[in-house]
Length: 215
Image 1: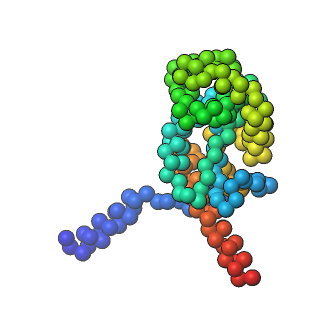
Image 2: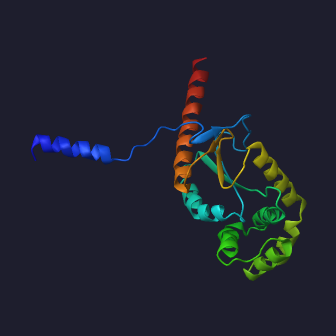
Image 3: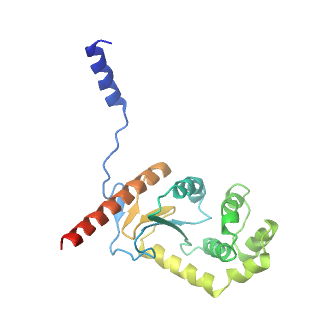
């Protein structure tokens, strides 16, 4: 191929290649003020605020689950169900913690999303959710005991306070290291921006460590 043709081809490829935009505050993430403490010292904590009752969370669930499964070991991924003061969503948040307490969360997590959004089952109170858990082969009695337990109610209160502290106005929302809330126009953009915010936190920690070592 003549040199001129090669240069033209390379120029066209460069123009067609997708450009990776620089991470920008207030476009790709928001900075939290004040910064929130995390439960994972030494690691970068990523929190997903969500609700089983939210159709967007239902769509995001398989994407964020696949993304979280590939996170490196220095990342801790947590999920916090939120109710936003809505009784049905509060009951679904309690269901999350009750399933967690009874060891059924891993098995029934995605199934509960499916039941609500694909099967359109009205699982918005303790009785209906308990009966559904029983039909899925779970222990309905253990679930009922956990649902109204002190531990579940305490976690619910902590989760609601966290959502308020993180200024969560909608779900799903991803927050990184108690410092940043990720923004994106699409689910994939949210996850891409989350990766970049995680890299930003790593860089900030590296600079902090370097300054401490120079002292």
